[in-house]
Image (cartoon, rainbow, N blue to C red; front, side, top):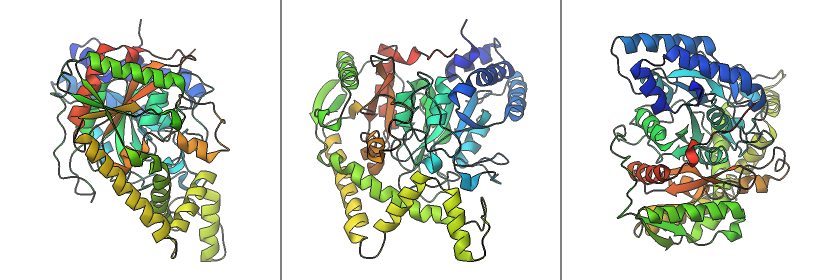
Length: 487
């Protein structure tokens, strides 16, 4: 019999509504799964079992009283760069070890208001800077499909928790692909909304013009549900769009794609695409055609410079955002005799190697005499990338392609080669730079049984269109129903 820990949100909600399952029993099953598997997976940094069971018991009371909330009694996990009141938030960094925020991030508040049960905080690359969750200051997370492989990053803890049945779904953050790439590596659905759709208030800033919160789920229906809960305008976030919360109830309609035009990029061989990934994505595009979609080739000529542009813009913004971690206000404080020594020692002891690398790169790019040559040119490249998408979407409704050029690589395989690590996100960076919604969903497995992700991209504010196409493909396939086997 399937454990309640392996249910989707909508499957669990149906059983809860029918009285077949209680929220306490569901939460206990998930906590038991964590107890038996997380020593191997290592998805969580902080667990809050007592609070979770209290929230579950309250959810059962509310349901008995006839209360109807979209996530009532559903156990979820949170990436540890989302502020949680009275629960440690470390961002995977020693510099914030032991820090307990006095407030909840807006998206956390909205989950609570929707009745969710919050299990704890998941591991991540330090300050969300990484593609494998090996840059966590505490320990690496392992991919449930193969414990010798990475789960992706930086939201690898959230993805691994969902894949292993250690949460029914989770929130992550996506700066350059950090929701979509780990979802692809773990056989899940990962959705990056349009920039500004989800409040960034309470999300520890990495690169403010790129960061977005997004859901990681077992299927498209759950992604749509979570998106409808966490979206909507927030006056506390100056970049929040003045849009009402999304109602995704009408977006998921069967699997008829007649009238849709799906754009496919020219061959990706030059980008080092693994043959199994290419084959699976081509098969997925053929499946979309079988559902009635018209397939057209599109060009994004400036996407090839997205990697270079991103690794100037994001580190530059990080160098400004992380200046607040100075040992004076919160977090780690080194012993020092002078203010300059305090800054230097606190940051030297508190930040890991990857964060230091990006801060130095970003600071260099913003220096007088280099600003115009590096940062300004990167922003100009960003404009060209955005214009490429605008031109492509004049011809098609959705663009399809690989989420990552490869499946999950081995732990330690790319740690000593930052460029190879960065290339894992080569297909997810252009959408982030353009501020567009994009979704990864399972489309097959390689010869070693590792999941492969199909990425769909839509124009700004067209999440409903994105989800409709993703749902149609999902209904015609069974990739999303497979689960890893963990002893």
